[in-house]
Length: 130
Image (cartoon, rainbow, N blue to C red; front, side, top):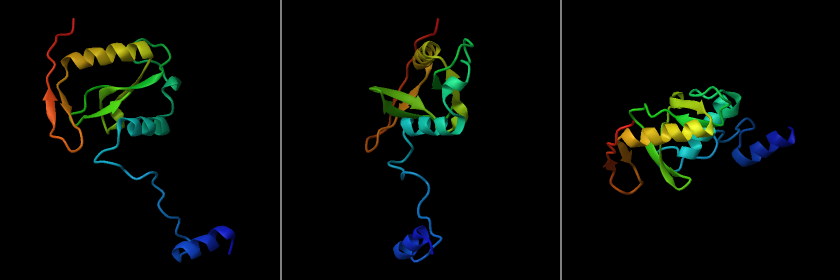
């Protein structure tokens, strides 16, 4: 046997057992905001390969569209950010369009805040978009 198969036999008893291949195990109930963005990068590549859906310039970031009924809230970059587990709810945007889109979305979207080991609370933001 080669060194790889010999090591597998000594470790597990089976030369074909490759062990766990699914990446890091899930911590918590859902993947984090950062984990979802890493999945986006792995499945679609960097956002800079696309054009911004709003202005047509080169995109730089993946942006959540806010349309998922089962959205989650995660803490990233010092903010509570809404995100989705469904990668189809993300669009490529340039930085300025992304910030404008998120600010408009934040003003009208009811947000359910989920934090582990705490009861869920709901913030209803009812400002009108001009």
